[in-house]
Length: 294
Image 1 (tube, rainbow, N blue to C red):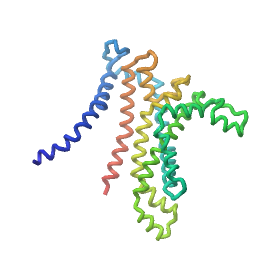
Image 2: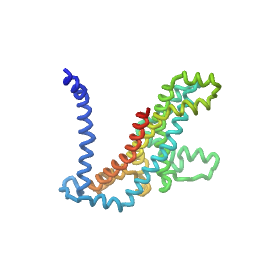
Image 3: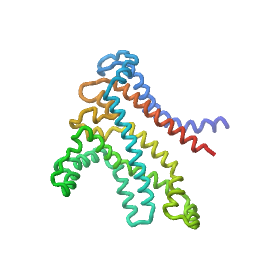
Image 4: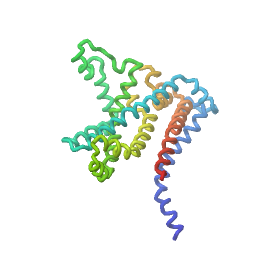
């Protein structure tokens, strides 16, 4: 009977583990294998290349620029999305009129199709008749700026679009965290004469640290593997050294045009995995220590 009870949870875990192994672990293993080969066509025979792909990677300026862009996206996400989402959560927790409508409107970009968001922001960023240009021309009639046509600035404007889309997701996390704080703590603070700012500083923000850790982890993971909006909005004449992220570089190497560098593309994908693990594992280790602390 004890043996049966011990193996029963494993039976329930088996379907999820099988799906995870087939769709996550197996592709990772295949990428690791292909990264050691020179393979330029699905019809060609892969040739063992050893670590030559990774040696070429260290000398690839586009790879390093893409890694730098991912790092900028991580910093911008942590510096913009999380503080804005936390501030909005504190504001929307107050009894203000239209609070439910505001919550829905702020979360709406998260459920919009990516193609629709790209089309919307491409219209906003149009240099001639785009909405942003027209608004600025109300104050500066001679204003003329190619938002996505300036190579050194184009990726920054796409980063703002990414922040606009994903801030609502973090807002929901912080709203859930604020709602979970016991009201008794606020009542005791008010009895002691604490104002709104003191309550936020000494009660709300410290108790939101676990939520902030989860939001930061998800933000870092998403920023490292981001692909869709950058690919849709910057595939229009911007030089590759000014538009690439690691994920878009993997795609272009393998499937865009006639390059077909599948082995080298796999080495970039493996490098992306290593970078993600190097960033995420310390965060998870720190979170585990915080939860296990007495």
